[in-house]
Length: 105
Image: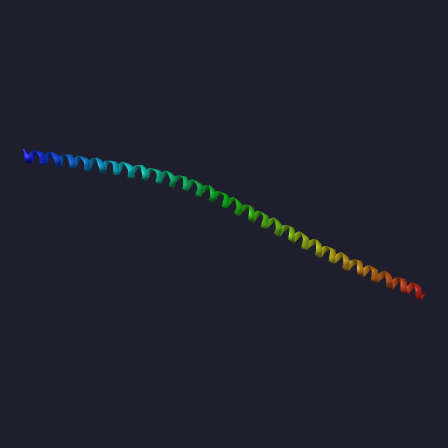
């Protein structure tokens, strides 16, 4: 009888340990599921941020290219104005010479 009681007690303890292990496994499983879900959400957020950064980078390059074009156009206009100014100066010098020649005559 004493052996049966010890055996019953051991079986009871074994069953209790098994239940505790099952609870621990279930708890850990739920925790891992939550972590996986959080990981998926983080991955989505990272993809969104990557998309935004990519868009920002493209727009930045577009603005940089446009600014370079505008600067080039500005430099071309400055060169054109300098050339026109030089032509005007030559014409003014020519007109002054003609006026001086007419005054001398």
